[in-house]
Image 1 (tube, rainbow over the protein chains, first blue to last red):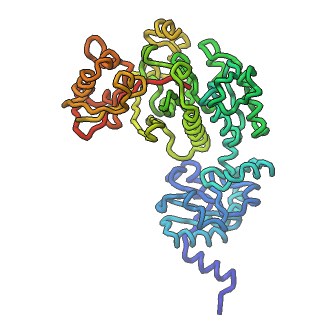
Image 2 (cartoon, rainbow over the protein chains, first blue to last red):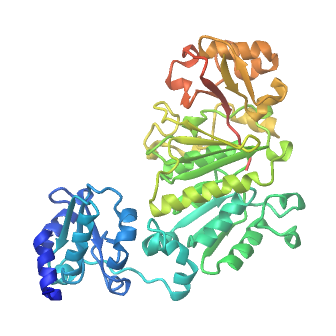
Length: 398
Length: 90
């Protein structure tokens, strides 16, 4: 005779390992093998999860377990604790994971009900509106993003230095992705010669400040984000005030003095910079995460002389190229915000469009770096953006 | 012969070539061979004292020669040397 549902669950529970909420609480709070040693997965439905879940839990409803668990827990040797409301569905899910080859899976007895009865803390996720759930639905479906990652994007503050070639595509896609606050620094106005590549601007906005033009396009694409405009040229007198408080900075500026200034200020404030530069058919990209990887000065201790540092205005650039490089920047920004993948830290990516080649080079921290070899508080405002032949460089650059 | 990748700013000095072959036992020799064949690259690569200009990054395959043995780093025939200047265009 077929077993009853209750009998079936009882049989399953005899085949899997269970764990008491007290043990899970200890692990999550640094006891035992610590939080790094265990991955907690909530297998309830999304409407239940919305009422609260264990801190740091990954959310994989049991109905999607087989198709999504590898995204949430790629390593089958990882210690996994599953829970549901009372411990039955998680027991069934534990059996499924064991069948899938997961080696160390436990079901939390009593589920979140017992967890709460013990007085342990739960996290109540902030809810996306129905409009946001629809707008970002394709993000929701990606295991590495999901509602949690989308909330991180909505909470994030990203500063774009420049609303030109690189800034234009970056601003568009970050606005579309729902980065909640996007600052833009640019003192220029839209010029006809910009429109071959700066796709955020339009012909009827020639003469309009770029920050205003960018805001119009970004809000037309996504009215739910905030655009903070800085119609100014960034310099030593205003950089600290402008960049402080941002989570990530996107460097798309068109000159060396500002790149060095930004590097030094961002190291001082420990803000990661997603940096790209373009010329002709060539692009360079890297992520400078202060004290985690090299900084811009570790890669380029001094700038080249002005005759070897032509600008796009002087030498030209393929109109598509800043699109390619700007979107690689936007991708790195999203990865940094949601904490997914391997950011381009300590690596420099070269793109050569004519040959359609990508080359990756290693970038090491320089133990003698003039800036990041020292603690941030020792970097004085007077030395920021300064390099040995700064005066000569700026004079030659005109 | 090693392959040397020429950055855009140096291509006018190599007749527009993006890659050139150059002989040498080590990085310095290869770059001097390049400068011999394309004299305009000499002052762009080397300072008066013969050392690499500080603003020129040179990679052997994917590694900065500054963390190897600099210009004395041995080079094999299958190696690729990348000359990399900073670019500021945005």
